[in-house]
Length: 155
Image (cartoon, rainbow, N blue to C red):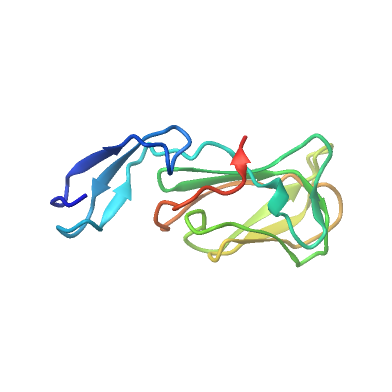
């Protein structure tokens, strides 16, 4: 869609978003590029449990999910096993933090801090310790363009 900066366009074909619509805002240029997803754009929670790597697993009866709303990415998990310092997950483009994020992981049962994790600006989640089933949960800002496809499955 070609338009002037400041224009809006409502996408209603459900090819990119779980809700079936996204309000796009023309941020730059006058051609058909320079569009950004509006602040209410929402991918919905996506179950990405199948994308865990390096022997990390989802704890019994739990989940591993990611979601993007506007320019924020929400991530929550309950993972165990794996090798300390090994990548547990790499988020696809559209879901990367703007900068490296370091956060605590808490034990699912006791809520005690049992180590930390790093989510890199390249999208890789690294759990720094492997002891216990941890429950990392974090919200970050992203500068990524809206994803061209959604990871995992609708949760």
